[in-house]
Length: 415
Image (cartoon, rainbow, N blue to C red; front, side):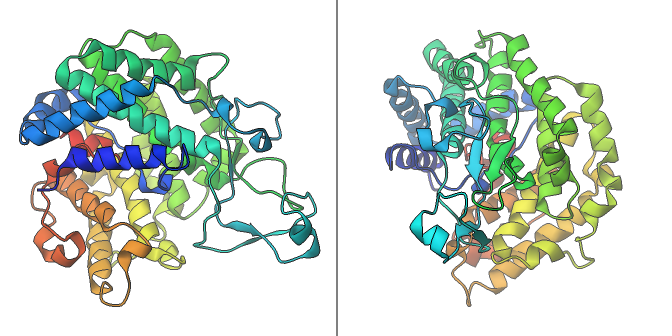
């Protein structure tokens, strides 16, 4: 069995030490939720399965603690300040948009006269802000889990210091908006971000789950009101901003991620009535479900340059909704779970079938496909997906509890 905390340690340490804050693409992450009471009862049994994983968890937490540093988007370079001129506003650059081969771009790709063109599947360099939010949430999750496992106040304190610096401190906090996410530079810039930018911040779910676990353990010492108020303000932005609403008005993964992100924000801020209303309306969102074909294919995602990635990516958001629905007593069947499960089977099948003709790791990490299978088994019941069918994809059969500590799917790893 591969050590889950070895994976976590490698993932964080490699990312943060490479180019100081270079991390894997945040699209490999996912928002996910769980019933914290259920998590509390089950996670300890999982980690006890390997004495090595226990020692590695402590070693990882000690390493992060020893850095004696926090994260803030305000620490970024001067050439990445958003048009608002506020370093507290998040900014990232349009993922697939590159300077064209024109005189203006060749002379200065940062010129306002440079025309950017879209090359699907080819990613531009990430901004400091995009790196820092991913790094912060990874470290907070590791510290919080170690704090609960070892009843460590110092791990809990450091995790909360990181949360305060990033979200709650007036000087260093990120403003609760994504007005400049996936900002298009150059001649055709609108001066604002794009609807695609919303997906940049979904790793905040790790902070939400860390908060819930620390509260349950009696280790949370920060102001819950301040924490929840940040997410309440973010909810206002999500439900009023034309940028955010534009993401919700699509027929692709952006709409699914909008629903998942808004659900996460309501969950974080204890807005239970709004959360339940969102979940109940979820199956009626005709446009969102329009790409779900009868055989399970996701037609819009299938047309992308990296269809293996984008099919799985949409389903991660869908499973987040199902998982969060369970915390509210809403069954998968009432959230179009049948369509989601059918699509899951299709995605795994088509990925395995094409392993002989493509290098799947070049377009999407096979690890994320097996966590998708684990998500299905978690929501629909053990062995709903027989992972041995996909041996070529998964390398080794992997049960649902093995991935409990993986960064991509926080909630399922607690079950």
